[in-house]
Image (cartoon, rainbow, N blue to C red):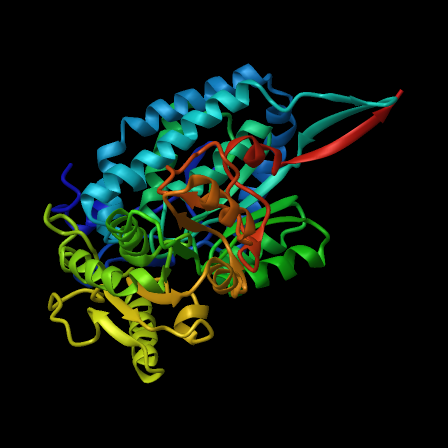
Length: 480
């Protein structure tokens, strides 16, 4: 089926997935799903209720003892079948992400689809070899699954962020209730089509779409949810943390970022700028790890700005299904308006526009914002401190490495970052000084087995790899 050309009725999903079956929700209310490139409604999903959450949590609770007792090799086999069923839907997933989020199809295929499949494959292997028991003195120390997990996921990576929670939770022996974002819920339905085909035991993983204030709050506050894993804004994460803390439950929070890209004086400047601009504009800037602050040594500053302007000129904004498009729309009118507000404020604060801005012609329909770069951004200004979550890059000069590190660490966030230098030892030394959860040195590739998470207000806990599986476990000591 060509999802780009499909009539909206073909994208209507009317059911929840609870206890291993597609079931009717408690009432008939629905949430429309918009194509942000055109503003047209392309589908709808049920608006879940607290009663739906109760039902799904009860199913997960009933399934937990059996799944926790399932042999690791058998859990791995279930995840392997899920991987095969999901991989068979790769083309449909990419088209659906392009349709409901606006990610250009090439990027939707490579990142939005390819990355979660890679993560799921890694979890097949980790499920087969769970954390080893340890002997500490006269104690046997082991890890046990935490229980029922509520997974509240965002709109910007609608498959990856679900898989990054569901796969390690299942590998650890937990059962899960998923609430996808109401802005991009259709992709999650393709995952649950794969869940049905793979034949996972009833109740092990359940789907309840709906809004954050209704389904998200009900899930975070539910007394039978042992742990909540949330990805989203820091403001919403704070609310989730309060709801979980009120009942002394566990929470893992992957929140916002304002990551710095440090380009030292001896760096390969053309490469550092090209990769840095691409990272900042990935997914139209709607990426929590985006390097939205580019810090450049003053000796290379003018050269860097010229390279930036040239790079940005190559970013064509438009239809996600057009192969020439490199930058799609923002997810909603509200998000586009918010990003435009940041641009206007940066201009008012005296930042110097290098590329883009509010006057660049854009497609007549859809929620588009031009790729925009500001130079001479003050490190304490709003543009350097607040997460924009759009295609807006702040460029800041520095005079020495100590100043660069101080500027980079001058943030309430600490999710990601980058360092570029011809001297790898110097780059590693700088990376160690950055108060952030992950740092790329000279364009180091993303590693799906490495722990992913942030310092400070970027969150609590880690996802991916062995650390991601351990996040869904409790430690037990048995004295002998």
